Length: 144
Image (spheres, rainbow, N blue to C red):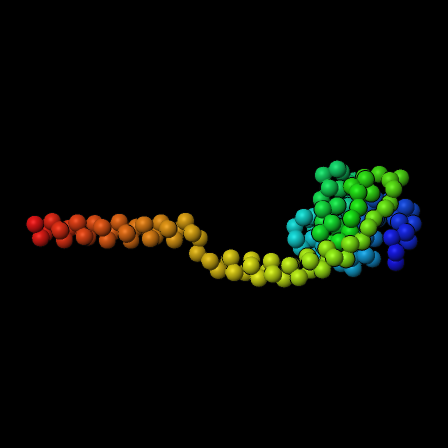
């Protein structure tokens, strides 16, 4: 499907249905996968797609940011106005970049959860240092 065909389909859809179409047909993602990174919350996406809530400027910006990361470049007005121009551009190079980085991000998250917090580590080292200094002073006083 080329950009013109996509635009022709989107022009006939409501802003909420545009989100759903892009997510399902272009990104081939379910709601859970689409919301994994936390840019758009799952409950928010569900409410948008069933048209329970109207897409506001803030959510439109988040959608555009999320789609940008997925390689779909579009304007926030696509989701704000029914009669907005429905021009989008698919940039496959971004998808290649973010696709592999998601697995690295998960690996980093797992490693971070295994680390000891630095503040705690420094406090512990400082406490041991002070304790050693105290004992050294006591030994010096005994020798005098």
